[in-house]
Image (cartoon, rainbow, N blue to C red; front, side):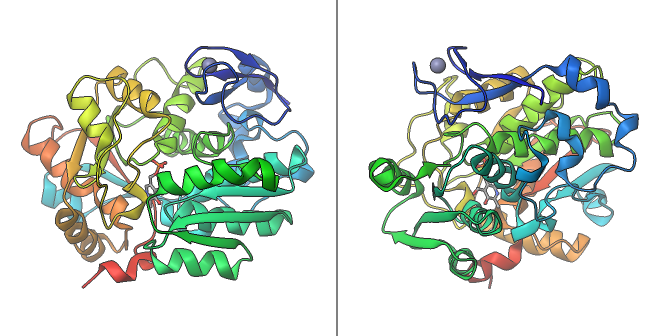
Length: 387
Ligand SMILES: Cc1ncc(COP(=O)(O)O)c(C=O)c1O
Ligand SMILES: [Zn+2]
């Protein structure tokens, strides 16, 4: 067990490990898990990874669960990183990759975060979990809660893609559909959780989903033989994936696995809901709530993110940027990537392609650079969105 403590990402206040926490007790911002990386590095070495299990638990020493028996797994992580062929040639890049997160359990990258969050909930004795979700986080939570023998309560907007609703019902969750956005669902969980005895596993309102998501960063480094790419393009809602990768890069530097260089991190949002893009352009550290949020890329329909400052800090520190694309652009990109590369992307993942084209057109991405697009989910969950 290498965790030393939890640390507030805003004010730095220490919180005790192995206790249930949501947000910082002083300032109400997210908590991050801190490890004794010197100790972790005694057994976790690059060489030691050869032959380890082909899921995210291969990075066991930098994951939060103490007892192996508390690990709740469905085979999450260690997804393929494809070098593209025709797509790269078409946009003029020799080294364009797709990290295909649709190959996770429940078909999205949300499985990573829920695997670690549910494992920790089990370890810390939680019995009932609740989450507001745009869809994929709900499906993942339902599956892991079932496997952990925990009860789970899910709140989603009523116009969430039907596949997400059905998968939750079929994996035993209590599903409530609300006439509103994910922020309204979050408010409902917050209002009821104490009376109901629910532990709130909202994005960044508990410290362990990020730990699962950070393995995206470890995997990228390992799959690229410890040379990180030049640019990472990532569809951002609540931002846990981006925040997690950024955390992983720091940890790997402390482990001595990489140097101080970092990829430029690029956030992609839909133009109908682009609070981070707006805040980035306006030079703000915190994002205003985006009014009348609307996009078919349901995972990007997040008008306000509690980790906004962590996303914006990572974009700026890395020399990256934030790009908005229209629904028409991101839906067209699903068919384009599908036909050229055989990956049926979620609309959120496909949004990376029109964003990349804008960056190339503006000279921000150069032809010789190594670029990774994140396909965070599966197109098959969004059948309503396609012609
Ligand atoms: C397919 C997909 N991509 C991206 C996102 C956004 O992820 P994050 O909240 O980690 O920024 C979501 C969130 O629901 C999603 O379902
Ligand atoms: Zn704090």
